[in-house]
Length: 307
Image 1 (cartoon, rainbow, N blue to C red):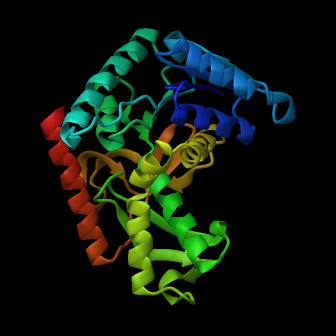
Image 2: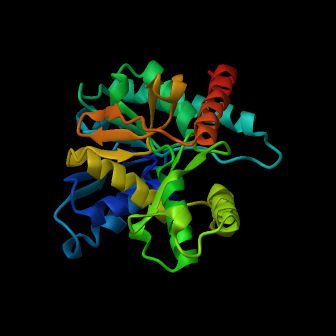
Image 3: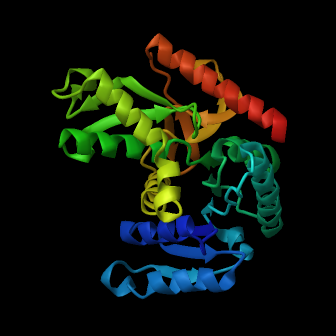
């Protein structure tokens, strides 16, 4: 499988490339960036460790590489300027993303290519890509709340001193302030979260707040998230590459699940080689379903303002 990373010269794109190398699954990793030197530098840095990791082709490339890529990952994006409003930043990123979509269309992606959107606002840009790129909606996926979910799980595991891989709590909805942690289905080691020793309403509130604010925390402390988002990207790509058909909280176009329509948002989504294979709609607590629908309305309002 060939994966091209647009934005491969930046923090997120380079961490994604490195995570894909460590995963040892994809065959070719291409780093593409508006700054070719940065893309080439990251590609070389990853390549230099290849003999210790996996037999892969790792190199810098151009938008022309999108023509025969199996997965095209877009991580390129702009950061907020001082005193800039959230809406102004969204408008600038929409303009940048439209240009990237135009370049991808010009390259002529394969009919079965998967476009994987990571750039923020990820749900809005995923919807834009579905509307403008021309690929079937099932072949356009956003990272959605995959990163938010692993943040929540990992922070909860640390607080309770349990193995992170034993924590199974998922966040759905918008990748943003209206995200919805689904505690009703949560488990730790197969046991209900709310019955697990040490779990209290106060702890749940604290962990939710930390997960929700993690992006801002990373921006303040180190200039932005990198490692965790990199492994989150690789996790989704591996499910595609291996046709694992795992249920994941990726962002995709909704047509009725939980009452959500005409919006790209994260719900329980089956991900495989052909992209979105389906949605699993299970019963949630009433307050969770209401919050999820509210999250959809927030995204719909944003879409109507900027697209």
